[in-house]
Length: 154
Length: 82
Image 1: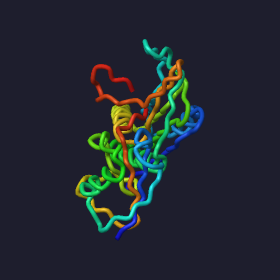
Image 2: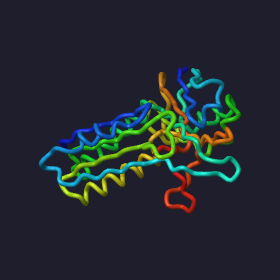
Image 3: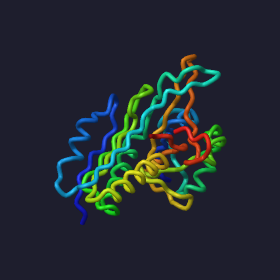
Image 4: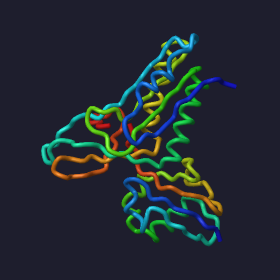
């Protein structure tokens, strides 16, 4: 039986960073807190101009269920005491946070590993999709490329 | 006969007639067999079929999984969250 608190949500609108931070701090036993924030890059396409925004959507019930499973695994495998996984849906502008993950563990090594594993697994398995919306009105679903490959764009 | 609900999500949405379709199958079939029916019912699915994953009742399932009455099946195109 593992003990660990979780903060798992999908938001339409800005991610409440302060609430997530408050949640992850404040335990005397959790000495390593690692945060990953995924931020929308301001890209430009030679044909379509500047990226105006990304539009995210999800199979929400399944996405939440899987995010809970990711947190449970982090608690089990890396003794995480607090795990926050929050993702924005709808329109997200360049410079805004689309996903925020915070893992608090007794020691830093586990916190780094768990946080890395959660974001990598989320990007592979959690049913969330995004569209690029460009200045000229061009809209296209993002085709994910294999992690680490040249030209990885998400 | 079994009744299932099929969800077309994200980039797969315009492969179906609408986001959510109810289908009656003659008998319980595996995901592998269901894919053949699916392509016949919704020909546009064919161009994505190799990249689609299938979730049954919100869990990913492989080709051998057997569908049951009341299942909700979601077509999951490659995800791009984060």
